[in-house]
Length: 245
Ligand SMILES: C[S@@+](CC[C@H](N)C(=O)[O-])C[C@H]1O[C@@H](n2cnc3c(N)ncnc32)[C@H](O)[C@@H]1O
Image (cartoon, rainbow, N blue to C red; front, side):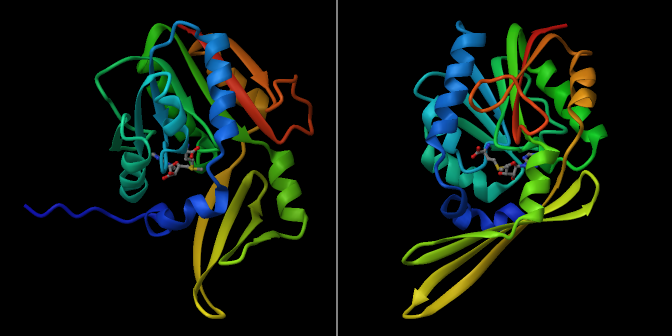
């Protein structure tokens, strides 16, 4: 039987993704700091939506790490970038690895890519089902404040010698956005080729997320990326979920 794998947006853009967003080692370091603080004994870790493996590359230095992602192309990049991690294609709203972990993480606004709150609940159910009794689930979200700033400000571009990237956000309706990553890559001379990724994202009000998480975890803490208490202006919010029920 022939196995046909469908391509998604990330598949076609995978080779250019890191050029637009960078390696973001500082986020991996922040995740490690949070893990050391909230799950000091953790040895095993699962990343949901591991992409091209930028977080796993750093975290495999400290943990026995596993990753899943729905994009086969991103997974093949992750295999090269983080060879010590066990990575496979999978849907974070519907998976069963038949294994439990000390930590489950879902960083870099991956959960915003899941476009209904009913499906977020399935991610929470799956994260919870894959955690050991003292495990911790850490994820971050883009807030409405961030998406509104991005969509109301003019798009910004990073112009380098051989490539230019542009990130732009449009609002479809309240809480629903389209994030557009464009990369113009020099092909020869003054000729650049245009590659593009369009990501539908949703935002969910924080109290609604916290209320849902309380069904799965006894303790939920919120931080901004500087590990300060979030305000209404916070643009990226980290949820640290402990004591699985
Ligand atoms: C913003 S990237 C983050 C990648 C990685 N966590 C990082 O920090 O570099 C989001 C990733 O989530 C994946 N993704 C989105 N929805 C998914 C789903 N339902 N199941 C599995 N992966 C998903 C995409 O394919 C993409 O690789």
